[in-house]
Image (cartoon, rainbow, N blue to C red; front, side, top):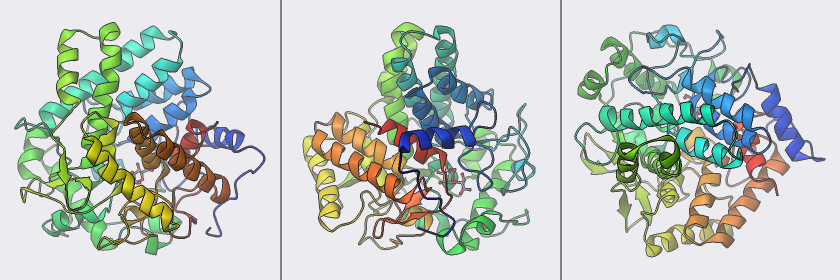
Amino acid sequence: MSAAMPKPDRRDPVDEARRILAANDRGGYTVPTDRLYPFQWNWDSAFVAMGFATYDSDRALRELERLAEGQWDDGMIPHIVFHAPSDTYFPGPEVWRTHHRIPTSGITQPPVFGMALAFIEARAGGKYRDRVAALYAAAMKNMRWWRSARDPEGTGLVATLHNWETGRDNSVEWDAPFARVPETTTTVLRRRDTGHIDASMRPTDADYRRYIHLVDSYADVGWKPAQMWRVAPFKVADIGANAILAASAGELAKLASRFGDADDEALLASMARPPFVWSEALGVFLSQDLIAGAPIAVATSAGFLPMLTDAPTPQQVDRLAAHVEALVAQGLLPVPSTLPGQPGFEPKRYWRGPVWVVVNWMIARGFARHGRSALADAIDTLTRNVIDEEGFAEYFDPCTREGLGGGVFSWTAAVRLLLAR
Ligand code: 2M8
């Protein structure tokens, strides 16, 4: 554990998790962690909302409502909502140059929103009908946006146009697609993250120049979806975002008969089972580089997430299970963001190797859905234990289990609440 990482409260991790969410609450929305991420992030908040739903449905709905305040008229839900100013994060609103009522970024993130809404509704015992209805409408508008803005050619898979949209910022998968993104920017880089976290664990400066090159390019076309699609030098069908989108479609379908109509039901049915790409050689599902027109042959933790849907065959689930069993047999914490042995695996550098407990939680739900409850329980137990032993870290080294990155992290606290016995 790094020196700055607070030790967990061993007396009651559930109480401690609730305290963290309370401490990171900025008024109905929760920052991922103080200073490093001082605004509302999209998929972080969806996990946080599920954590709140274990003890406070009203607060859980509020989290999604505050996120929906950032939803654009075209249906896009931004990856960051800048509710209040802060100078501890780069890039801030002045770099994004968007035009929403509340300042927001111009890109999105994996749509856990629909999964979270169904999760909260199932625990709210029929209460808050009007609020759920409004959030369901926001979720459906967002599903339609993904379809039209990010799959204009109707392939069944949506594209992410910025690595930050995948949530797995510097995954080894994006190395080749990024090689064609220029490092030139019209924005001066003023990184704040490396002032909070050791630079050896964060994306490099060259990475950041490319990230900001993309922001500049899309800001220059006014964040209009059709023009972004045309100018995008980075266009990938991220397996994580596609699996989560399909899972949200499946979860929203459970609400559609009460809150929606036949059109919604038809749309959700068509989105719930996309044509995921499977690698027989690697035994995982893959992202695709849509500019190269080829799958990206890197095995990542996101390659397990199609198990959140009915798409995988029993044989595919067996192959995915074998990876987890092998990791455990080697004494490694499952499931590293890049599987060890893959080129580019780095156990401490952001999304190139560390374990993220939100991904673990989804993978375990996937195994449970496909009848592998013992394996799901094993992942849950290992996840719970690493949090209890190492603290509410942003992520964990799969080799040493050390908690790394930001401390007192909201989505880690949320997962601990979801895993409370
Ligand atoms: C990380 O991403 C942000 C950009 O969105 C960053 O590094 O500045 C990722 O881990 C992302 O998945 C997460 O949502 C965000 C806040 O926790 O941090």
